[in-house]
Length: 149
Image (cartoon, rainbow, N blue to C red; front, side, top):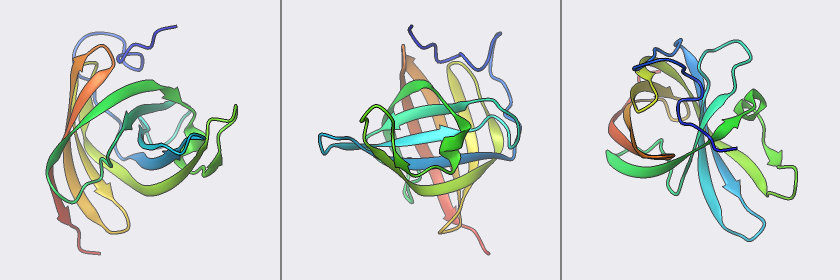
């Protein structure tokens, strides 16, 4: 079954997330030795809604402004917010490299802009997401600055 980038958000136009909502970056190492980054976003801090997930070749929690290509993956179970270890079906293993909270913004079927407070090190970032075609997105890290702890 093909995955639609708007699967979480029926209807028209952008939709507000329910901040604060958790987000996590996982390093996914595959059995063939290759690896990529999975960026997962929970629509709300509580509930059972699955995680909006993107696969990237570089980390989206950059300290410097940059643009990244991303592939929208099928939704993932919320357990991945805290999970590290092997993936069933001999699909490799994941390790959490960073977690944070989305403190504002929106994510709709074709675009979004998120304000994220990353932990360890504590940083505030603004990230813009734009659907390019089908399941391909452009993710732009617009700004990132240290937060006082």
